Length: 305
Image (cartoon, rainbow, N blue to C red; front, top):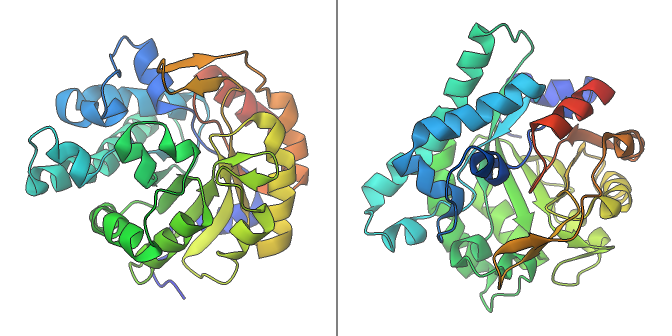
């Protein structure tokens, strides 16, 4: 069993629904920050760290209980392409947790009395490639190769003492298996969250098979989906709950679709707080939003739950 469980988070999931934050990138973009390069929001860890804290604070103020760090696209390889060495890259990864903690302190100073937690984001290998391949998976790499890629930054993030590791936007079972192996023995709990298309992972595997990977893994305290269409959540949540018996985490996109070629969102918003009760009934205990879901939507979720 994991000995150093998240203080209060696992217990909270047994008693109530916990509200996650929304999209980091859209909140930073709405504040006027340019996220058009390959590092995406991770660039601001080096250039404008105070902006990251402000984005977290906006979500805590709106009613989020959990802030997901700006480390989704932060990797040693990605920073290395910018000429940032491993020591400085490790410092930036750790700072993502510290910035979220700073936002929690500021929220408490402003009068927020409820428990607040920090989830350290671990994005998929495809996020480092910055070519949209996290929505396809199947990179032509073995589970062992993917584990070697993920383990060093997971170790750095775990050492920064987040409450939980968010293994998120996972497109296929091979990468999920690698991530589950990479978190073993670190003493920090994790949730495992796939990006899905209908009733399958983005790579086409049945969700029953995908969720089963985490069923007997003590380190994984919740399973579910993120960065998907809101319409895909209810089936996925019910399947995750049935297959694993664990609390379910769900945080879909707004319903718009990312065009990797144009690097722009297309379509219309279909995300609404009115869907939350159905997600809860299906087993969801951590509920929030991903891309294009902002503080106003998170406030509506907080009021609903």
